[in-house]
Amino acid sequence: MRPKSLLSALINWGVAFCVWATLFFLVYYLRAQFTYPGLGDAFLVAGVVEIAFVSLIFITRSGIFDVPGYAFRRLFESFKIKNPKSFKDAGDYISFMEKKRSVNKPYYLPYAVFGAISILGALTFSFMV
Image 1 (cartoon, rainbow, N blue to C red):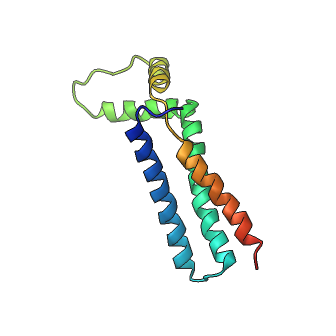
Image 2: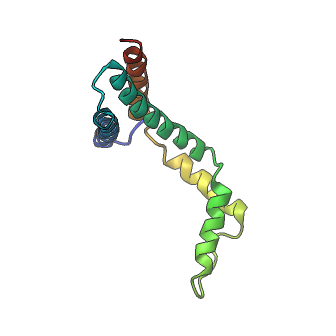
């Protein structure tokens, strides 16, 4: 998926790096073992979280959470007085979400790149002793 603009792409790359760096340094310094296996652990945690984020995007975009999303939407709408239903049934909600997903495509490349490089770094540093 391509970003809408260069600014959007730069923001995504910046956020991906900030998430990666925060997790990496948090694990590295809280572990308090400044060795190669410590670096491997820090790379692994940061990489797995980034890859898990990309995986969660794919799972969500597949539509697997549409019915629970509709259920929660109806639950919150039921507490409003004289509020008409925003969707006739779950089928309408699912078709609305499919249209919305086809228009709004995520830019997940930076997260996948940082995750993959981080996991490779974890493999490299875990074998160094």
